[in-house]
Amino acid sequence: MTPLCLGSLCDASLLLFTHTHTHLLLIYFPLYLFLFCLFISLLTMSNPLKAVTPYRRGFFCGDQSITYPYLEREAIPDTLLIAGGIVITGLTIALGECYRVRFRGVHSRAFVRNLYVSCLYKELGSFLFGCCVGQSLTNMAKLSVGRLRPNFLSVCNVTYASLNCVPGSYVAQVTCRQPKHKMVEEARKSFFSGHSSFAMYTMLYLAFYLQARLSWRGARLLRPLLQFLLVMIAVYTGLSRISDYRHHPTDVITGFIQGGLTAYWVVSVCLSPPSGSMALWDWEQMC
Image 1 (cartoon, rainbow, N blue to C red):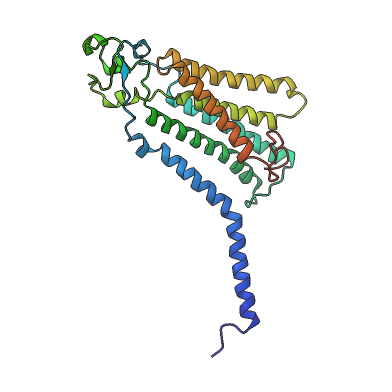
Image 2 (image 1 turned 60 degrees about the vertical axis):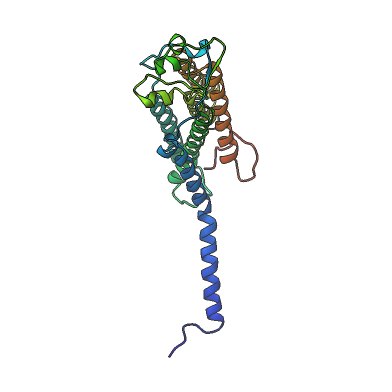
């Protein structure tokens, strides 16, 4: 019988096999790590986390901050918020990256050879990853803090008179007359505002993107104008949550801070150059 390999030939084949698999592992490791982190973030936003009941915080009898009426209509409902944030930012990034690949002659060090795919993977992937991280932090805060919304008593369908409590005393537990249990649970998720954090993240991320990509001379005034409008959209979204009696002012402010910090972190860390320098707008020739 003929042996399968002879001496140095067998050693060379084994070395080539090991080198090839190590090289492929190093190439695809960032993708696997990104997908793993994205999976963990999506898991914290999924139904298992939403099924967890929030912390049952009590209140002081006579506290006027939770006596506001419940408004059926919202200025910016969840569907409009998510669709607007994802579509506006995602579509702008997609068009911008396709334009760069087609007309600006960018190059890529990514493992994907197709420039369109590599640029969209980097920008849209990082953006969506930041969305998941931000919303995961928001959900965990809502469940662990359990702050009562301004319309809690209205949703609970009780009053201080019906509770027959002493003004200033702490009411640890209350039996709500609201038949819809889900509404009562949502009324315990005031801190912090998910609308504020999501709107600020998506709009500020897009403002950073425009700072990096909108570099032609005619955009010297157009760019700051667009960035200002984007931030104002986020601010209006947060303020509408106060006027809708869904959140306290401190909830909205905290949401703004969390969304802004998440956007800055994604841009400065996840999208930083290989050298590690903090260059928020130095992405022009690479994706």
